[in-house]
Image (cartoon, rainbow, N blue to C red):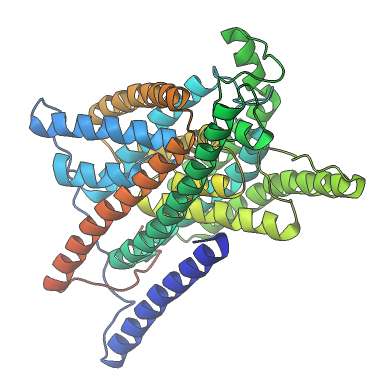
Length: 454
């Protein structure tokens, strides 16, 4: 499945799901049903006590493995955490989504700390692509706020269908990408067996090679690598954007929904995101145009695509879509960002590091908001966050050791694909089971009113 095929698949699937809901709505309205005028539906808050038992042990194991694989793949793991917290531990759905964000934040922070002390596999540049982080972070955070709003309005079964369609598509595309990379790495290893010490540019972009390089690479200390990977000006701007979004959410949560000030603050997020994204997009577009005019084929950043207006618009829409999925699901948005970075030509190691870096900002935004809303028990959140921090660090360490031994960076892509597919299965099973229960209980299955459902 190519990029165009994936886009066509997603558009067809999403359109069919939305049209199905509209058809159900029309049919119900024809029978004089009050589909849009239902009373406010609440979720009973369920917070189990933090105590040593088989549930806690199993949750710890699943949380550790999910965090380790999720951070390596750059997808976070929210699609695994939410079902685990509801089915095994016993939390209600909203509290499970909030704790899931805490786990993603912890794992992402640990992964970022590990990555900033690791060299880029082929170049003397940071392993985190700050250009791409600067491009995607504001749109991802904007998408999260949109996703949270849609989660209030959309019926549960529709969210389940949309997530299954999305996850199956992205996991299939990532798996196909991994197979392509595996074949290329196999060809490269055979070439290197015949020609010891020869590494072509294509191979250098695919693996953490320890083969004899044409130019010996200078060994750097941990402090030198740390200084190379940290770009303080970029970090300051990204932190400022995060602070503005967080401040808006804090103020907005204390307001009565649907008041004039509420909508002013909600809409204020759009110009902030568009301005930051537009600045970086214009910079990439101008640099791309300049290089094309001079015949320079070198990539501007880690992505190998041409930064045309169409590609920039596509990246913006994917960023918003990733954030929207994060808001609907309770994940960090990496289920879109991770595969997208691979799709635009970023090598797996940099894609993983950049995606987890961006997710650290997006997930922490949600954690602050959920904390102010008192959506999760602090003891449980701190414990599972601690598990995720350890998993994020050791996951990166072990996988990079495996890559170094096998000389196959495609392992990261297969892990990413596996986590997304596992999330599709778990979320699908939970969603279908819950939907069947709602049908049997004759519960409301249509759109909810945004203002009364806050």
